[in-house]
Length: 282
Image 1 (cartoon, rainbow, N blue to C red):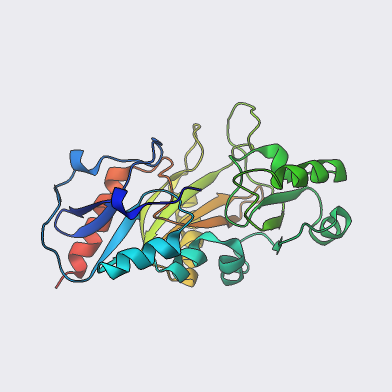
Image 2 (cartoon, one colour):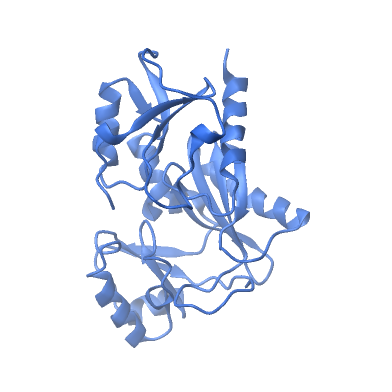
């Protein structure tokens, strides 16, 4: 996870309404050239204190960066505590009881026997913050041999080694058409962005051909909204999926500042944020 240097961030006033701190990360699923679609200014003068949305990818030094910016009167939309709540499963999981699969987390990996007896098989493994590129062999565990192999890789993986290990009850999710790869099989999963408790974007999570009908959308967004309201964060992503029995569940949460757009239109998302903030203006 990169260390962000304050000097590389570009402060933009979007449509004279929303402040955004931008640095491109080189990913088409994340970067979006706001200047091509919106009026963007770089004012020489600004209010002494502003709240800005960070779009500079995932960072390893969020607390430090927040403090540096705050010293300049620039406050990221999510405080360090809110960033942690959106990003780390051990923080957000207790708030989403009943909406997400049963989970346990460990600084030291438990024995296969103990965790499999507690959560059943197969197990779903991940870091407390994320998976490693959705690799199935590191996530979906059926046997002790698979578990031992995954744990050994976790200890060396640059994405996973600094995270606590999360063991989750495996959710049987509705499948969608996709070609077989080394990644977790694609499921009927959707990403949703929530700005101050209002949905500003929702769309397919996986890059394959599927979509929800109106009834499914209403049911899925109801679960996402319940999760967003429980978390009560300024800007958060809730990923949801439908299980094979038709139930909708929250898969995970993320700080929306760090999250890719998936199949959501970036233009529509930012226009929705602008509209909501315009309505809030005196």
